[in-house]
Structures are given as C-alpha cells and as structure tokens.
Image (cartoon, rainbow, N blue to C red; front, side, top):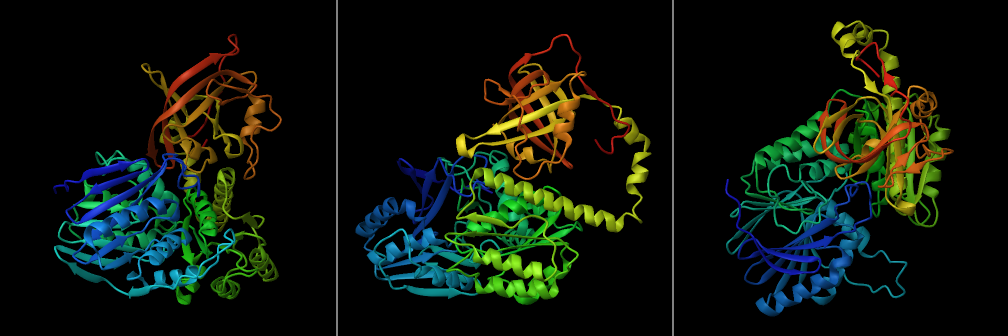
Length: 600
C-alpha cells in the first residue's frame, strides 16, 4: 500500500509543521529532555507531541491539543490560521485529557468564543472534574465557562468538504477517554496513545519497519501491557480498516508494513494473556502520578511472567471489578489524596476488595499526595483490620516519583511477582513433576556442561540525584566478535539491572578470579531489597565511562550495548568493548560449572 506524500513546511526550534494533505496539517512539538514519568521515557530519546489541524470551509478542527508548555507557539499558529481562513468555529476533538491539556483548552476558549469540544463519555467526566480545579501555584485563578461539549457514545462520522472523519472511542484503564480519528478518504488513522513511541523525531514517518520497533515495544511494555486484553481487542478492530498511515500522539508516523506492525501489537498482548498467575491492580489517578506508580509496579511484575490486570475503578463497572478480584492471585490498590480524602470510587473499590478478596493472597498499597496522605492511611488501616497480609510497606510518594524511585518501584513489583509465583508453585508442587524430570533430562544435563567465566556485571546511569545503579552475577558470557571487539551476555528478564541495559547504555563486566570469587559470589547472589545499594561498603573504582569496578576483579571491560535479542525467558545483549584492563595477570579466571541446563 502506497504512503502519503507528506512534506515539512516549516521548522522553528522545537516545533515542526507537516502538510499531510491540502486540508490536514500536523504540528509536532519536540522535547529533547522529557523527565516526567521516567518509566516510559527510560530510553532517553526525548519525545514528540503530535497535534492535528483539519480545515473545512468554516471550521477549524483541532485533534489532540498540546499540553500547556507548548501553548504560546500553538496560539500563534491558531491566530495565523484564523487571519488567513476567517474560520467561524473551532472544534476540539480529544481523548487525551489531563490537567495540562485542559489548561490549553481553557486558553483557546478564552480567546475564541465559538468553540465546541467533542469527546467520549468518560472524557466528558474527566473534563468536568478538571475544568474548575484551582492551580495552587497561581495567585489569580480565572474562572472560564465550560464550552459546549459534544459527547459521543459510539462511533460518529463527520463529513467536511473532501474530508470524511470517523471518531472511534477506545476506552482503556489507563486512558478511559481514549478517542481515535480515522480519515477515510486518505486512509489516515490518528491513533492517540496507541502505537506511540517516545522519540524526538524530526522526520514525519519512520524510515523502515524496524527503525522504531524497540521504542514502540518499550512504550507498550511500560503502559499497554497491564491492559493487554483491552489493547488486543482494540487493535483487532483497528486492523479491519484500510490504513495507509498511522499517526500516533507521540513519535513518528508509521507507513511501512502496517499489517505486520498491527499483528505484532496483537501478539505482544496475546503473549501476556496466558494461564499465568494474575494480579489485579486497582487504582484511581487525578493527575497521573498514582497511575505512574502503578505503571512502574506493573512493569516489574511483568518481568516475572505474572499477568497484571489494570483496573481504573473510576470507569470500571462493579461486576467487572468483582470478577477481577475473584480471579486474581494477588492485589494492588492505589489512590491519590484529594482534599484530605480518598476519591469516592476508591472507597467503593476498597469495600469490594474487603468483601470479595481472599485473605490468603498478598496485597500491596500505594499512592501519591501533595500535602498529606490520608487516602493511603485509609487503605492501610482497612485492609489490615480486614485480615489482609501486606507484601511490602505502603508506598507513599509526594507528587510524582523521580528516576531512582521508579527503579525501586520496578524492583518492588518484581519481588511481588516472584512471591505470587512462589505461592502458585507451592500449590501445584505435589502434582507437578516437571522439574524432577528436567533434572534427569539428558539434553539438559549435556547443556549444563557448557561452562562460562564467572563475572559481575555492573551498570550506572544518570547523574547526581537521578543516578541509578545495578549489578548481577553473570556466567552466560561469551566473546562475540573480533572487529569491533564485542561480547554477548544473557540476562534474565526479571533481573533488576535489565532496565539499565538498553541500546546505547554503558556497563562494566568484572571478570572474577578463581582465588577471589567467593566474596563477590556471596554478595551478588543474595536477594537485594528494592532500592538497596548493591555496592555499600565496597571500595569501588570507575572505568573511563564511569562504570563500576569491584575490588576482587581479575580484569574488567567497559562496554556499550549495541543490540538486544529476546530469547525465551532471557535477553541476549550484544555489546561493543570500549575499554578494558587486566588487574591480576598471574591468576586464572573463575569458571562456573553446572550439572544441568535447567537452572543456574
């Protein structure tokens, strides 16, 4: 299927303007240093926000208005269009609704009186909740009347001159007001958060199918995975449309191998929807902060192959909530504190959990707050009095989590997932003889005879208060290339350090000696508590790229990740060696001998 001939018609600092068709324009706002919600921005490629403008004879349609930090540049563009085309009305179509977007809509509403907002029913609820909230950082909060709102409860078609728009609600737990727009004549899908990637891309569309695959998969794993069933259903529906271009809210457009890409999105979701243990993650989130905590916990849990079912209790029917609680193997519940209280939907969901939840299954609570944390106290006291057992201390975060805290939250999630798996195995141990038979399987016994050098992989990323570190014992290590010098390492998916081994990241490989391996072996094989400093008490040195060298090393290598390949329950990392040194030339390398290939 041919692609649309889209041209870049202007570029001004962090704003790009693409002409898609004669009447459709994309305004792209670039942010090279996006820091908020570090989980989804962990690849550190910045981001882009795509707003679409559609012109008809009398109306200007704004699809997904930008957040307030881009307001000045956007206002100038809107004023220029009004001076040029003399529009009579503005129609805002948006499913992406948060306080920053509401500030933009308020500003447009104050400037242009004849304005209508088109949104879904959950979107209308969100707009109503946010419209009259006061910003405590402003001395003079101006009251602006809520514009006319057009609520769509099912698909709606709009015919505008030579443009035929179809508005399709796609509610999900993370974005209940989700709304995508399909332009039938040019076969363009404006897909909102679906299919996004956080890249500060100056080009309209990706150059080939694989150029952004890692970035889109990372976005999926961070935000889509906890609601994989909903995502699969929506993607299967989208796949029925004839599409030449997918234009998401973040990142470049997709114009190549679209069927293959949509099939990947479905496959990613179906791989998560298995018979594995399941956790019900119940939450409400006023400003996105509590949701970002839940995202980090969910990502850590997903590393353990435990499925997470994300439930936004503000928009979930009670019968669905009851079924999720009854089928779950563990529970997480999170709440913001608003005006000293938990939101009403959370109080109701808490009552449902107390009446329907199994006290033998682990529970965890979390929440964000601005000045107090009464909602978290409520969850803790009610669940404790109800006989539930907590897997970790309540998580209390003021406003949004920073980068080290996000890393700690992922580790808490991984610990929680492992506990769920352990309990599930205990229940099935009497009837499950799989592990016993695997230990005597000749091919696995033969596989275990492959030996590797015993090493400690260390990784450090970020500066000052944003610095995060990780480490793991590694023996599945091999030289992989001569020119450039390279090596490969297998890293289990549930390893905490895995998130620090993305393409472009740096690490050190500390090769241990046969005489001095016992102390690092003891230190780096023990379980670390979430957020615990792996290097406390060690007299460490640094490589030229500021990666960590531990004292007992025989030799060290300083390397940069170049490729990642998903292999079953591990990632295989290929890295180029940049620096290295021998510290003890007269001692042999420690070697890891195993009797079976079924475990380490």
